[in-house]
Image (cartoon, rainbow, N blue to C red):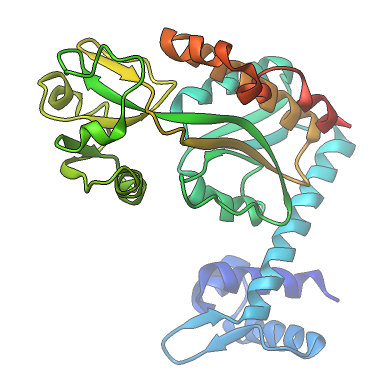
Length: 314
């Protein structure tokens, strides 16, 4: 099979336009069309749906593109390894504070060019499957765990509790544990894309939340300080002035995970996993209540102790 035919198909698949793909390949449109037809005859399946208005991938075309991207990725990794040229590693993090692990990886691997992308995990995992990224630090939704791509490996960083942030003046602020049902009459902040999580938690406690504010809790913190709202919050978050973060009487946890492509360098993945756990531990220490909570039940946070990442480099 002619690799140039696969390159032609990849160009059409990514551009979804024969005109743009031909320009990218520096060939004429008839020559490009001939390559695609030859590839389809060779495989015996249609790879594209063509019309006068648009080009779309068939199911078989989607699968072939996936394999082409993986082969291309493996080839570039092989070249870097054999020629000892610069290696490149693309890391996506969903938690901004965990992005500092890039510095540790750069120190450990001075010949490694490490790109860092801040993006939600549900958007990054499909790109990981296609080989566009090497690794993703993400977090599951509370009631909808994200599926791991078949060509990726995953380790848990921590199962992080979901707590509540209150103003210091709140009647429940001094409680060591806050009963969720006693927040039935409060106005709530709804974090982006988290309405389902909030409504399901509150429904289990017997009430419908009064959602009045929409956006990041930390960006809307003045409503909290002013006593106008309460909010769910990750337990690791250090409360700003005028607020407290308290455990709920319902133990709900969100998995923070690290996923990496099977063709990505295992030694770099192992280092990043260790650094992610270490950095998370440092973040947790910034919230004394949460730090004490972890120490009181180490069996619930076993991923933060030991060195399970050692097996990854093998």
